[in-house]
Amino acid sequence: MSGMTEVSSLTGRLLVATPALADPNFDRAVVLLLDHDEEGSLGVVLNRPTPVDVGDILEGWADLTGEPGVVFQGGPVSLDSALGVAVVPGGTTAEAAPPGWRPVHGAIGLVDLEAPPELLASALGSLRIFAGYAGWGPGQLEDELVDGAWYVVESEPGDVSSPSPERLWREVLRRQRSELAMVATYPDDPSLN
Image 1 (cartoon, rainbow, N blue to C red):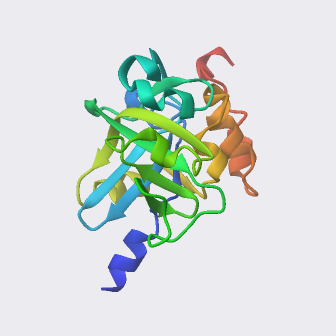
Image 2 (cartoon, rainbow, N blue to C red):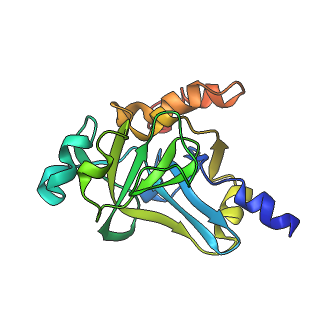
């Protein structure tokens, strides 16, 4: 059972793609892990806005989303499904959570997009809608971590609703108190150096 504790501890953390990660789905990606256990992992890419307005697919939720008010591509799996990730200021316990919101890590949680938006409107600090998600089977993410594909860092509630998602990869790395802060300066195309 001790392995279970170790595996579970990554829920709520960020996976930041290393420059060496070759998969184009995750180039400079910042992934918020929503679930991570011995059965696998699930997360959403926080920095892939699409041109689709939230109001075009989930009209009632559009007023609750922050800027940019578009749907984000959460990952390459199940692109036809939507996930709502929201921050409830101050966080809360599962028992005290507003109806339609399930805590994942601290103030960050999942929103039931089938619930009436007005149920949650007063409780939410920010909301982001994702089409699809990133998923890993049992042990797959651990293998990628060993291969050096991802940096694992702490998330902050503001990461979910960054108004400048195109800068999130550099911003997350820059705030690290280690050599990772230097990776933020890595050129987009090293061959141009």
